[in-house]
Amino acid sequence: MHIQALPAQARPREKLLERGPQALSDVELLALLLRTGTTGKPVLTLAEELLAGGGVAGLLNASRVQLQRFKGLGPAKQAELLAVAELARRAIGQRLREREVMDSPQALREYLQLHLAHKSHEVFAVLFLDRQHRLLALEELFRGTLGETSVYPREVLLRALHHHSAAVVLAHNHPSGSVQPSRADLALTRHLREALALVDVRVLDHLIVGPGQCLSMAEEGLL
Image (spheres, rainbow, N blue to C red):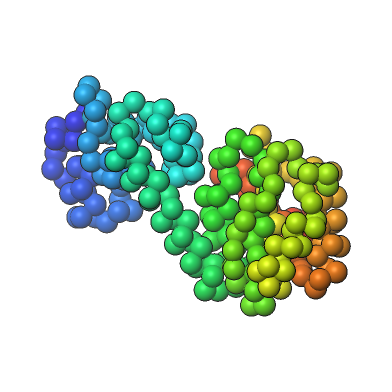
């Protein structure tokens, strides 16, 4: 249905201004951002199609190449969506830089969801923290099937020293969707803890990220 065909109080913009953004569905919020649809495809229909694959998180993680696959999503709309996704990452990253990361477990999970959850390949990332356990940087260091042979402790140590880190949080994604740690995940975590301890850098946690879920090895008593 075209937005103009809706009653005034049901249109996304009017609804937001009257009742606040929390009153809008994901589709309505996205339609408000897109503003227009394409020939034969109203903006609400376009928004539904964009969210059908992986919801809001999937859309925020989409690359320029992935966005280009949607008919009717031109360069201007692609740029807007990429900008919104980057603003979301920066907003959560700012929160983690201003307070102790482990005091904000939900923000940490959201941050990792935005960075890792919908990647089609495995990525190993490290969050480097200062002495107050605030975020200094997040770096994606390795890609591919992860294990002790593909994640090199020396590289992790060098980056930790570069950032003058006092602690780190390890993270990687499971494209399969399951967030249960494998034996290789556990062995890798142990190996990195031992290596980083040599330079007095603590491993606070290792999180496994999947679409819509995240497992903390520390909370599970596996660290």
